[in-house]
Length: 256
Image 1 (cartoon, rainbow, N blue to C red):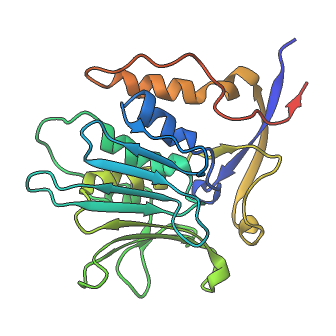
Image 2 (cartoon, rainbow, N blue to C red; image 1 turned 90 degrees about the vertical axis):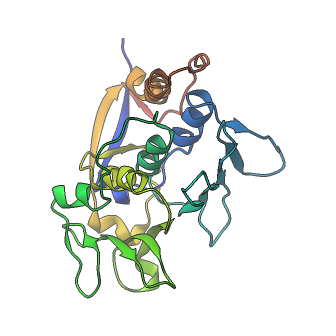
Image 3 (cartoon, one colour; image 1 turned 135 degrees about the vertical axis):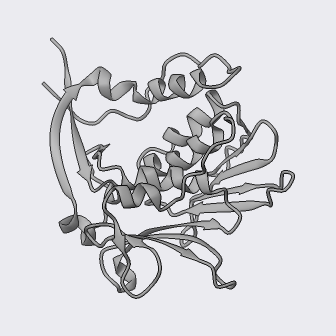
């Protein structure tokens, strides 16, 4: 008899909660060759790119962004940084890191970060520059007034401080195609799968999202991370062989 597992599909995806950090860290290490240190006394992950130009830190400190990525200057490309709060869905952050680790291609048009949003019917924001999701919850703004030069992404269900769900920031010199990778994942209307027990989403945002409970084969829950690692490894000109299969996360409750 085949076992099925109950999964919660959450939409809009930017309210799905952070998810499993391994969705980002494991492919960077296994498929893209990023190295990591190990300090068993610290609840953090530090990954360095093969060329030692980029460092990703996952550091769960209260009141600060959990994800921080810094990239050194390379030729005419000045140094830049990006930061993501704890509740930023890892699948959306992965749109950024996947673009960063993609093999370089020949010259071509550089996508603008607003392009994927406009294609998804995001509208001009009221009262400030930028774009807002159709439900009015997610906002993307490019600040260029000197003091706040950079890209700001905010997801909030109300104007008061308790209504803030998560924020992301990209510094002024962050390459546009990387931010476009993030906004493409942000605008994607595909629901995100989450463990329904417990569903780790702030109570004040729950009336703003939709959850569908579905039963899927256990194998479909066990190996999406492994499939992601293989897909990203296959696109590298020379990539290490992925390690043996592992569970991407503890499985949700089983249902016959």
